[in-house]
Length: 266
Image (cartoon, rainbow, N blue to C red; front, side):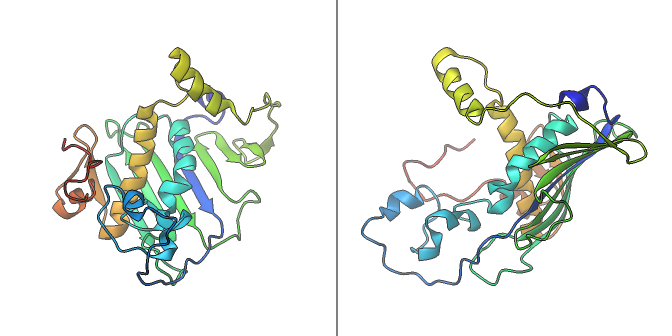
């Protein structure tokens, strides 16, 4: 990130995260009796009530509108966060367009298995100031155009930088690969340690809650575009979708009436 900030590939105009992996088919199930070991009322929490199905638990809750956000908000958000970080944007996008649908899984999953989503940050609208973030998802395809599969790419005016599971790759103005000095060893528990230190000593978080909010909002907006089938204009300051009441209604979810954990109205 420091190299990007210092202009190693010029001005970063576009960032793309690709989520490419093979998920499991969760099958098709009907409501059934709740197993004795599950407190299903507690499990549902303040979400709208749905009769128990065996393919809700444990991991598969991610794939249902009532409980999760699909893989864009499950695995995708991590790479989206890195893409947004590298793009250098510190607000919400103003325009979101794209595609999300099920192309492969014939099962009970409600969220798309495939996305091609674009988020525009217009700044003042002038050439050179606008930025674009792209999210691709194929959770049925372990077949990859990059040996690392899931990865994040930054497109600059003087080159390309890739963040992959196997390391960072850099390509210069004529697409020639460039070597990168070795990085310090990354401690696997660094983020957990930072979180505990913040609780105990008020040490600043590496990624504060505002950072998470900006990145997770992209996942929600991508899901709204996929569910409505149309692009949306978003007002960053009010956090509302403009000119589309149906889409704007999806910026909040429905909760169980009078449930103790129901969030207060804004």
